[in-house]
Image (cartoon, rainbow, N blue to C red; front, side, top):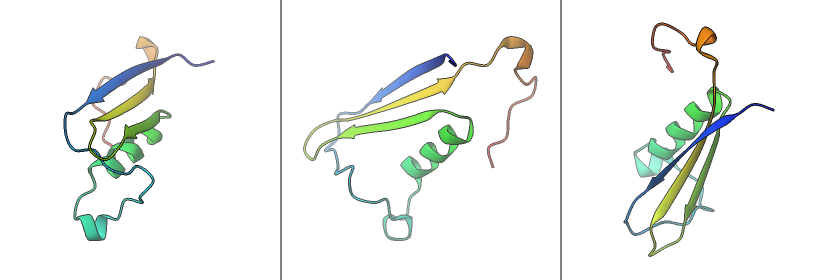
Length: 78
């Protein structure tokens, strides 16, 4: 089993319906979609907890990489 490092992000905004699909062509932004895609590209998990009128919490679980396998240069995520 791979060990993962959890990261939690909170805001104090107005929240949103997480069951509504992200529509970048309408919303004109890719923030959450882009974050989710990048986390999944490295084998992680991306979770959103939000309700209208409440804060939003994002949990990102990122796989730990042993130091000897870590790149010496930053990894470009397109």
